[in-house]
Image 1 (tube, rainbow, N blue to C red):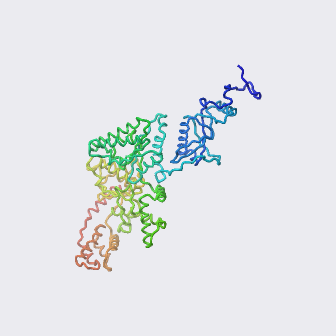
Image 2: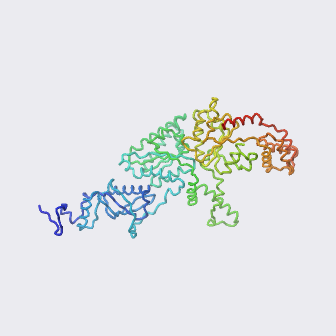
Image 3: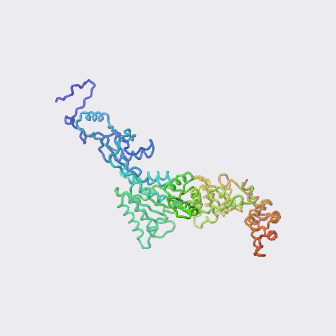
Length: 626
């Protein structure tokens, strides 16, 4: 058999000759024998590309490779369109490299010999590497009408960057490209649990996820499925999942899921137990049909109230805390408030702006003349309670250090001092009375302690004040202490989870019965004795109290303070109240409280602090400091 060779072909002994059918010379390679593409480089037609080595760039390359694999056959200068961050993006294939050098050389030779204008065809596979390169041809413009860029669903969030990244990694890929998981032999996640204080954006985030990936969303409030009729609650729950499967891809948002599936160990009704079992069965059967892409997103502000069987892997695969933002995150939130003006705080500040304008202008008000200022925002802040504090929030009293007399050494009696600390520092104040955390049921007292510290962390920076702390932390040697509660208290103060941004203050009038473990460094490591005021302190208390009273201008404060020797600060304040009542009894029209009324009240007052009590306090202080 003879083979023809071009006359200008210079062959040597080391030359390699490839024999191809003559029918291939005037035409391109057959599509059945198209070479495998090893590397495909794409450049953007519209929009830029993310930074090198960023998560966004990796995600975009995954989407582009998925599109190329779906097409299978690709050519140079082919355009690929993908949905990225809620907008349609176009990319053009700029370069394609073969999987082997031989195939590359054959393809180039056939391209030069071919008389056809048909471009070369390549095969894209899972092994194809996708690279993004800048568009060097600035003159290239899209010949098609581009899809208008949609608003980014996540643009309305501020301060939740980390949580949004976690949610997108868990939900977007399984719903948009489930075949990736099947190809790698993985099971897509069935659900996630978003938990945090009310008003932090849990439900809003779940809706944004569905909007970002163009998926359907079914929002169900836990209580609305409940029914008094036997089996109807379970039927409604099955109907929700059936509706979600018909709308695949779909996200089922179970709002307030703790009301739907409470813990079965807490002695709930048979209906609640059946509902929990039904939901578990539905979650376990979600991956039986690969074409039904449904993911469940549960939201709650009480994650510990949910049945533990629902929180294991394979059901709610991941739990993400949507906590109250810290001050740096508040900057992001504030930017979104200014941009969208959609939060309750914005509504309040808008109301202040309207009120200010109408007060200054009695004529008709034009909407275009209204301007929201920083002063309006600052005026609305006091009326807004932090979401993390709504269940335990104690409004910080307007008590300042100047209102406390007789405790100059300590400031640098207990309850009011703690309140003044919170007011002066401008942080949240959480007051807890020791006995109110105690519960007769096993484990409930310890859970109340953990929940109190959790809420204090969520509201950080904050002051956590335990009044009558001896009820929780009495010494374990006398056998009357609640050891489990004390252990929980000690663990929360310096356990594995660091207590950041929370200052703990305890108050007691029985320091000698406190457990020594509570007083060691890193717990309650500062001991302040708030004793009865001295002569100068009592005079200061009387001056502060008399500022809000109508008293005789010639009243002798020093004489009254001398008569109250041995009285506590509360008794000195009560003295002023008693003097005012005596004046009212004597003359309802008296212009002021006279000196004699104060003297009478002081001489008749009973001292509750005895010398023996002071000696006991001194001994307790000495033992705790030892």
